[in-house]
Length: 349
Ligand SMILES: Cc1cc2nc3c(=O)[nH]c(=O)nc-3n(C[C@H](O)[C@H](O)[C@H](O)COP(=O)(O)O)c2cc1C
Image 1 (cartoon, helix red, strand yellow):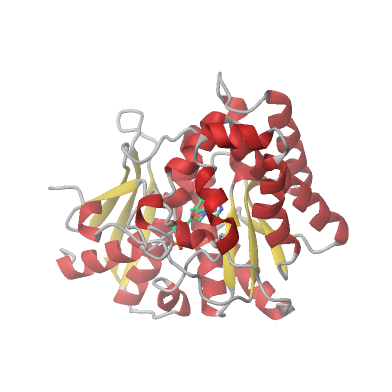
Image 2: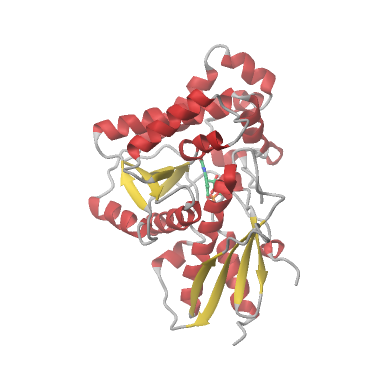
């Protein structure tokens, strides 16, 4: 049975709402009569930080989870078949659709509302029931675990790791270039961008904005790093927001080959949190940077990477750390990241 085109369009539109590192949207789809094939978009993947395409795998996992959830609402069962064909290394998976009973869910309602919220959160606790619900949703994806950093020791070890990881992005020229290249200064502080990060979404306080804009020049960053700007930024970007967040979690997967599943799990927990009215921000550097150890020319010195890897492993309970997430209560983001037109994700037949 051929799936109607409006159903395929609707499922693709849901996938487009999914998050991606630096809003890179590194995938595209090929639509057949009963299935959707998800491909890596080479022009948007393979950044310096995307070692082994881990960031791309997470983004693809999140997009596919949206497809599965939307398909279920529309009355289709979506079976995800992962591909590891050496001949087509860019083919991520095939999502096969078969008719089923429609099943609406709060996760589906949350798909268009989910967003990254980088505001500082309010000092209001999140109930155990809500946290259990979010954790349960993350762990629907087999092999994924959401570990709460809920003891003083774990929280402080996590904060230290987050600080150490995030600050490296301001310390080394290639990572700095990559980070600032993704920020769309051209749209100003009040508008969104359909690709990349609109500056307004970063919630930089108004007095700091001129300095932040100047930091995009490596010469300025390097000069200020001489007086410890990279350390300060690690604290401001990660430690401060996570220190005062009511909940801080670490998402883990079974092995380093499971970042796609990590993306599916990240998306489920994010949708569950959104449905409950919670704000959320992921932090990927601690999980992603240590992967540089696999490359022949890492962008960060190996002793720093080894320290990050070991600190992450100590918190990961035998799993592979993917990303930290902070959750809490906050106002709506000043600006939300936009998306390209869903049609631009569809490969011509
Ligand atoms: C793999 C991955 C890594 C991410 N890493 C970070 C991060 O380290 N810090 C951050 O603030 N946001 C991070 N994000 C959030 C993205 O920047 C965000 O999803 C993207 O800009 C689209 O915005 P939206 O989530 O509001 O739709 C990450 C998202 C994904 C999927």
